[in-house]
Length: 234
Image (cartoon, rainbow, N blue to C red; front, side, top):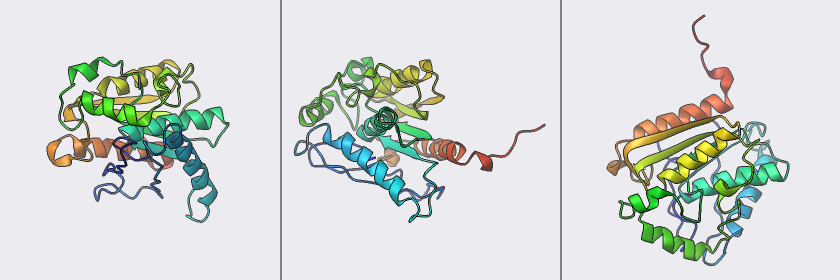
């Protein structure tokens, strides 16, 4: 799922998927969705779910295993990845094995304390977030806009949630990881100390990027190919 904001005609995306440091673990496909303000919510989440269905349909052509699906997203893409898992659950499939949410926006009511704490942080500010929200024009209380506000987070895929210390969205990710865990979903939550929003997209400004990428690829490998994980001693 694209990163950055799903608005303003920008498709500035996370470098995660195309990074030369990312190991070739499995077939990967990156899809573009229509953007606000030209295409207001819920166009983006519906496009993402349609892309998921298309990926399953094309899996045999790509020599991919449609029974091992993962979604991942950075920033607004993290929001869309989380929403896609909710939509897939609510519409009875396809089954998603794993979700990787990187600095995700999960509460579009913008209620997380870190938004004010890091209102003037590098890369993403509170003012930026307010502008993106005006473009997206979502029903911020709907779970397909604010996945944190879903009544039920049960039966969602296991998750990796990464956040950065100096990111306005930090608490969005941490709150969502707690909601998933409270519903019985296996979660690994990591706060990258010293990091800012966009640590994948701007690795030269974020020393945490290599560690974050290593964790991401390790968790995806373990979730989708558990048979490749060496057995422990004894």
